Amino acid sequence: MDVTNAVGNSITTNLGDLEIVKFLGKGKSGYSYLAQNSGHQYVVKLMHYEPCAYYSFGDSNKVELEVSAYENLEKSGVQIPKLLDVNIEKNYLIKEYIDGNLVTELIIDDSLPDSCIEQVCAMSKVLKSLGLNIDYFPDNFVLSNGILYYVDYEHNPYDEKWDLANWGLYYWANSKGMKAYKETEDPTQINECANSGVPIKLPFANTVNSWLRTYG
Image 1: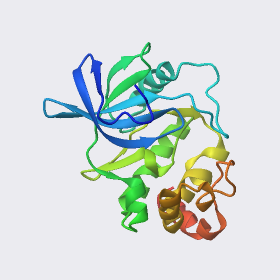
Image 2: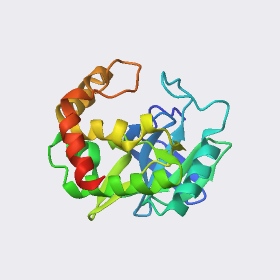
Image 3: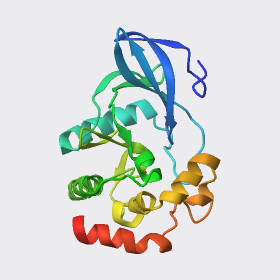
Image 4: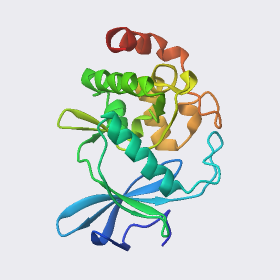
């Protein structure tokens, strides 16, 4: 199966045969798709091994990394989708589908509620106490029935440079840049330069600092 264009295919899992019906997004480790069978919906994540200019997974198996990360986050109490099935040989995992609003879309629409900022700041405090960063890019969060979910499993050892306050929140504050990035796929709309992975900060410092004073 072509992981970059899997819509219309089916995949045999321990949950039965799943029909892949919609592309959801691409991350550093995989392509995520909405899949269904018998009226149930799931997220299928098909791993890729495409290079990333600012992040390396080394020689580790990405499915095994995600399983380990899921187990750690489950213990933390952070709201995440349940891991339902794993296949290391075929390089995929199946997650619970969280039906709600992608935070990126809320940002683009200028409709991001303060409760999202409050909840992601609370997540950040918990994870920092555990010595962890998650990927705070807004594509990785869904607001469902007022609850904010981190729908990825990736985490890394805590590093102040890449935490919520010094990295992630600048994407949450950049509504126009995020809209342009999604339309053009040009990372310079949201980052200092194309391959840096470092967000544009100066125009959004007041907003981010205000959020941190209130919720951080």
